[in-house]
Length: 204
Image 1 (spheres, helix red, strand yellow):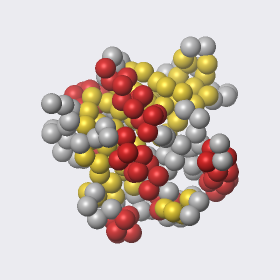
Image 2 (cartoon, rainbow, N blue to C red):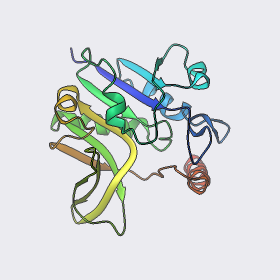
Image 3 (tube, one colour):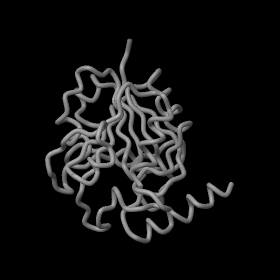
């Protein structure tokens, strides 16, 4: 039987928002939102929080793995490559601030692995060159897809473990993307906007 792991990579440090990954978002640490969604989805054989932070480890005493302290320059793929994943056939990388990802979103993205090696969420983007692009470390960051300019939403990725080993990236050449309405939280303005948008969703 195939096995799937969900990895939530959560550094303790953050340059622009201090303690971002455990900062309170509408009354509770933001990382608790994606962790709960991963748990409620029923998809995963294991969920781990991969962290160098004692405070984050304290939130997840039974679900963390030690992560070496790293710089902002390390890509997610480089971070995950440090883990022993041979026991798992599929990998999900869920960001600790991915508050807009729902159980249904996760299930839909996971389902894409029936036909593709990898999948991620994208959002509409303006003023970006409309082609797939990779940075110097191979990270895929935007695309032209079905007549729209889109970019990586920075929320969640699924990939077959063998494809991850081959491409050393969270997206393979055989990939699919799904739309997601979200905010990639990098500044305090993003944070405030995200809280407002999330509150509106709760209100229906």
